[in-house]
Image 1 (cartoon, rainbow, N blue to C red):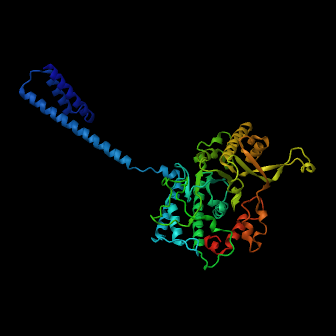
Image 2 (tube, rainbow, N blue to C red):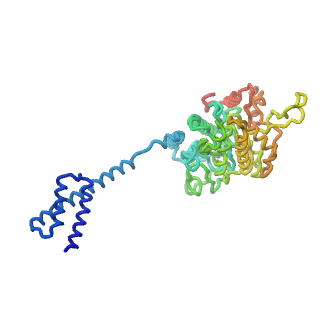
Image 3 (cartoon, one colour):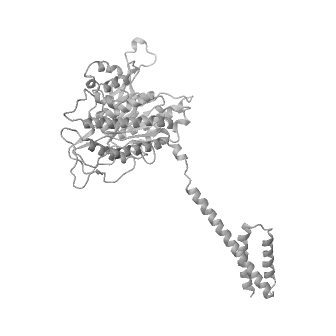
Length: 511
């Protein structure tokens, strides 16, 4: 009898514990119930009336505890539901260029859907490719685009038609203007190199990315309109006049491949990258578009810790880019055979300079020289013609993937060493460091180095290009042009050549 009474008392005490959480201890009702419990446990020989009263009190106490627990569960459920439906805004604020790109891609995809016709048309002899076929092809590649470029980083501006073997990495310095950036993109899109390579742009900051991102989108749209206009031409159409744009370099003639390698950038669609628009039993298209991808990264994404900040007070983009290369070049080292590192502000690509290194090994590095020469200190003016050493150009570098990676790693180590040896923390020229590596023979180990005796032509070399009707032919013989310190405006020379064509001038609004 005493054991059962003790068990009963412990169970009742457990219920009272929950009750005391929700009701104060000094409540008269609770005090009364406690007294009842105390009296019931202390006296073993109570009357039948007292026992009935205690039993009713126990039922009432347990009911109150159960209701309190249920109320607590309901409150926690509502709290969790509120937190789960809350949408944070920090992610959107951290990458505004990704949101803008996603909106631009969705609008572009919607416009392509509205303009597409359900009928399948094939190119004829009088036309390079029909309008319906072009829209289907462009819509197919637009729908495959995503906002991120690679593994949740960067921004995908244009997804190419297939995987490319070569890569162009352009760094955008802090002092580049919109006109200079626009001209680099326009000339790049029109050149043959964009049909064979992917392009990576490295921006100095998020503000530069958000400011110059719309320029990339505008030039991408202009390129699509330009190709469509040339695709609509046939033998009976009005000729567009002399132009430096050759649409055939963006077309793939002949029998279509059964499988194409999917581009590295953006969200992967499927392992078997065949044409999603091709129906069963449909013959392969004899003509297809061919162009590379265009992506952009911020320097903070590739170098999140700003590795050189501890050695320099201010790290310019010309130096920080060497700290960004290890991550991006390391992640794509198995996807590309040759690559180019170029300064967006200083150079304009009019052709395909990579033809110089495509036949060489992956350890190769190709450097141009500057027109300036390095004269030893202490020489007189009459002795400057002797023992002169040509400076290599550090703003444009080409070669195989392994060779360029080894060069970039050696440059990063040399930058850190030079910063530690200097007394102050002021920035210095990267050109001097690269020339020191070349002259000291550091690059001779593991790198097949080739130094050209030629320098990159500047705008002075384009003198007389716009003076006659064959200016486009004269301009097309240059694969790369350097802005330099010439008084001749390179943008004006190129725009005059573009706007000389009636068809080209109808595409670009600034003609």
